[in-house]
Image (cartoon, rainbow, N blue to C red; front, side, top):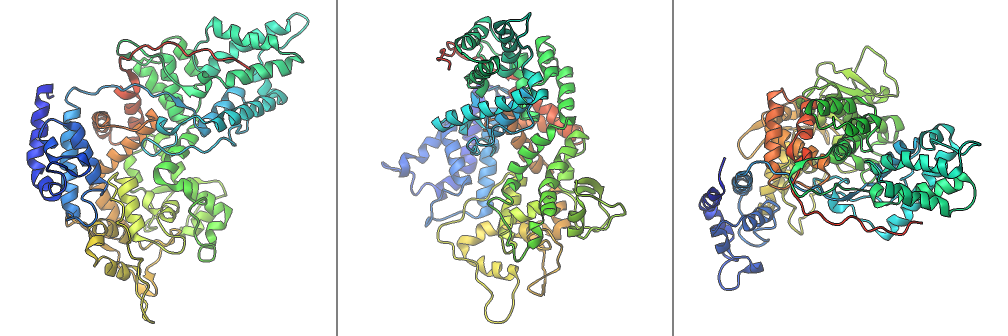
Length: 611
């Protein structure tokens, strides 16, 4: 532990260690009376974490040094970034792990549809026409940074609420779920409406409703004319347009405290289900039991084993790996790869990584299976597509299968969906595949390419050449070489897989060379060699996975202080053999997930006119 007075020492040490780099690559422009961009190197001499963070971001992203200036080698840049990032993280963690305020955030399109499904008991997605949500935070569409509310949303929410309630009223099973009382000879319409609202409001707002809130919506019912169904439908639509339904926010506290039980129920259910808490979570929250660590752990396991966890796996995995775009913006050439347009093969490709990840969590298996495994999930046609021979006959529904030896599968790198999204429509790309590994698996993305990069040359004359040979010519350009020395070797190792993941041994009729060497001298050959190389760097992979999953759980981007929590979570996961449920438990029990900081108490939301 480092007291606050030690922080300047840490940063001074970082400055001394990295000063040659700064002097060589930054000093020429960022000094003197008018430093470029108003940023002076001398500002780095003091305990200025903000300034150092700015340097780190610009150097890591490749924005600095600018094009045309003297540039460091990839290894020098990586060493500078690694040293500075480690130093800043140590400084940020000097006071221990601190919670951050939970941002107010709107339910995204998926969460809205899933919440209406569970609230109304309807089998349809009433939020299907809502505008798409952009990615924010750690790259996910549930991040508060991008969940804005536009006039278009208001219009779409009204239509979605009406569609969901109208469907529910017509379906007997759904109607019974939310229309708990109806008028009769012994029960007036107003009394029935009161009972419906008292039951519906706490579930819609995901917390106990106040008497004033019940009275407000009962007033809406009183002001309507017509049948009971039309009046109660209008009232429930008003509830579904309330900020208390559309947004997730937690009451501030003047003192730091554990997250209250009802808020904790929502944090847990929206993390692992992408939807509202169920009756069990509501009941535990009402009893004040959910904050008990043992109860919380038990509930996390229950949610993971529920069928609704499939939706969590789908939303997380497809955004983390980029496979959501397969069949949307990424479509293999139909003439060259017609197998992709077989519905069963395409569906099997898409769900293979999703079901695989869900299996690791629900069965508490090692997360290192993501790097290499002896099983996967296949359909009948996907099995034949891969050329795998099994004794059992598969069907259209994906099933977990034990992989025979020498199938060249196992782990994410052997899955067709991953290989397709890291290829061009008409050919493989070692560059894209190397970039995908650095970004999605290791969390160490390469900087963007410089402008005016020449296209990859086609082979000249009648002599065929391999893709590797053409890329080696491309790398003779010094501007390109620094990044390609990191990207290409990783991608070359996967050249045995074509765009759709079929195994091959030649390219343009010539034998494939799948050997690679990293800048640190590590050598490997083919997918199996690459897997072993990644397993040797498993801490880097697991840190990236933990960072992604924690950001997804919190619904916001992480900062350097959150890295302290990531370190703690990783330690707990390592001590339990890298098991999937341990990662989930450690995230759910972490300070950012379980604790609230002291915040200024603001006045309650101003009451807005109801329809």
